[in-house]
Image (cartoon, rainbow, N blue to C red; front, side):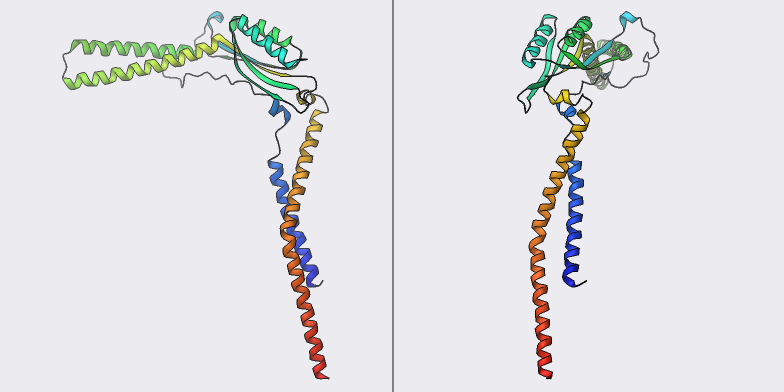
Length: 293
């Protein structure tokens, strides 16, 4: 194998390595699936209220009627008219004491609208709301979530009660006014800290109770020609994989062309240099043979 062939073989290997690296990087940056694009995740229902303090009533059995439960549901519905369905949802929420918490929509390539609407509905209308939203069209997905936060509420109530008692004792000390100035100042600073803690605990408890009062519905709406319907058919995942494969192949081909454009001029320059060197050696050897004769 002569030097030119070796050079071309080395250049081919370099291009191959660059192409493989580009393919890997492109695959890592492949677009998310249509389900991730068109379907917002449902809101997470955490208990809130911070960590559990000593003296909490974790194992206390509470009557079913007094339990505090955060409820929510995620519904994916295929509708015939996105705009009309959105109006019905807003009207239903307002008539039942609820409201639209968040809304987003996008227009797809076929000019159809799809979107996600998050609605807050009072707990007492949960079943009616779920039935109404399911009747908007064909339901493709229905997920209900519930979290019992009764222990959190009871724990916060106990901590608030204890803090109130401490506040009363500090106020009694300040009312007595038998201590020194430094003792009075220290008691006032402690009173401020206790009141700040009470406000924080009450804010956490009220926040949980507000979430208990309103059920959260995350509604994913799309029309029959939407990609969101396609991914829920038996051939949808296959089409999505083919799209991602086409994206990877196209991007890797572009990366390979960039490598070739960057390397090719240097290969030509080296090729010309090697040709000139061979001819120079050939002329030199011919000249040496002529001189011997």
